[in-house]
Length: 340
Image (cartoon, rainbow, N blue to C red; front, side):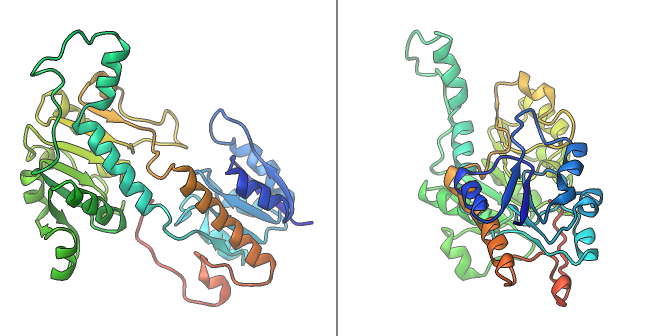
């Protein structure tokens, strides 16, 4: 029977399906990612590795697995798997399609609204029994209608955010490497293109939806933040390294901008001490969540099952749907500039 290894808990529906396919070993520890030395021990007799959760399958892991036949990742790019090592061993590495963009756009807008309306702060206010009267200037939030939202990156997630902004009667401006067509701009409420600096100056809310590349790493720092209005809000659900957290903390602390909502950080799992800068926890004008932008139950089930379907196809002698190293099938190698 084929032996399958999973380094982290996956959805029940996917796990039960895998058990009908082969002998499954799944790590169920809850104290962080599975230790690397334990991974090396577990993969030695495995045919298939199920990759997910940023648990690194480096060269050492790929080379230790024997008889390795397939790596199926619950991730679009599987950047935490050594693709080169897979190709050297003639082992297909599979990802999944973009199941997360609609979910992430929905979450981004939820984070935007929670930040603008100060919802977490209001919740704690009630919890701490501090509500004594309704004052005309008590707990003032920022309404959305009539405001200008500036979206950096108008891909699948940015476009989803734009549609939701239009539904809230917001004015949409955007920045993108390649400007949208006039017809596309009409689709997003007559969205208007802006140079990056102009977008930061004009927007009431700036939303970062761009991919992490060599060009966007460290993109938003003191210079761009200094252009924002003192009444403006910054939202980041893209990738942490796009934003300079120290510069953001200074801007928030000095009231140079009104607030921020963050779901991604410069330091994340599997690095040590993941999470935001400690100083950000001292501020009331920031809402932070632990990188859960795609963590809807339904979405995670879809992601997990797609990785399972790729395993099923491979075992049936068919080419999996989402091969990331097509050179193992004699096709041209893929070339993707996205870092993570």
